[in-house]
Length: 240
Ligand SMILES: C[S@@+](CC[C@H](N)C(=O)[O-])C[C@H]1O[C@@H](n2cnc3c(N)ncnc32)[C@H](O)[C@@H]1O
Image 1 (cartoon, rainbow, N blue to C red):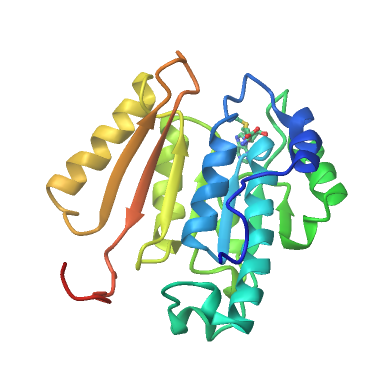
Image 2 (image 1 turned 90 degrees about the horizontal axis):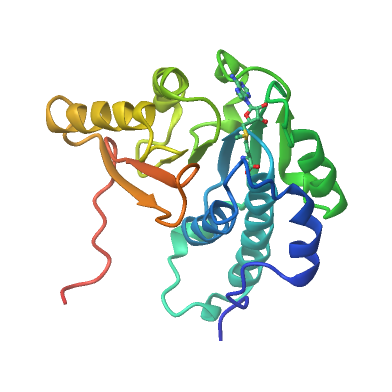
């Protein structure tokens, strides 16, 4: 028996977040993708740059993880292969969401209101400020970042975030997801740089994969970078 059913949203959630689904943002599938990713990798410290539809999916996943964590810790037999280390520390996740509200169609304030209505705001800290320099305000408890979701800006922002936020990502599997990378010149330029670095000076620093939504011309892709420069060796089970 699994501790919770593998459904990503219920009807009440789907209906509450509908007003945040703005086609120009193109995150209609990224929200559920982030939800599933967070359910699977169970990050404790999440940072979102660029709020909106995705904010509520992240928060819902954090809340569902807490519920599962508590049930599983009470009864580890809920899982087929529980890892005891995962249950030693309390699971107190948080989302630091950064948005300077500059985008004329910014959904940040609406997302906060919807999250509050859904009683998910207890996991949320909103920083209404520019992403540049914001990392200085992180508290010790916000670091290292387990998952960084970037949905703002283009090439210059990507490189600035790489400089400022990449060092704050957990070296043992921290994830950086970037929106809209594959089918525009700025995204491609940034990806080429990542690949070049990986092939030359940063071979063991990260893993990289991108996903394309082939039915869309824009806002149609994500790139996932997994930091592994400090990855622990894990062999839990013998082959095969
Ligand atoms: C594409 S929208 C985010 C969409 C949202 N993730 C969704 O799923 O609906 C980008 C957001 O980033 C914010 N933004 C743009 N540049 C920023 C910057 N330099 N610092 C902080 N926020 C920024 C905008 O105000 C806007 O709300």
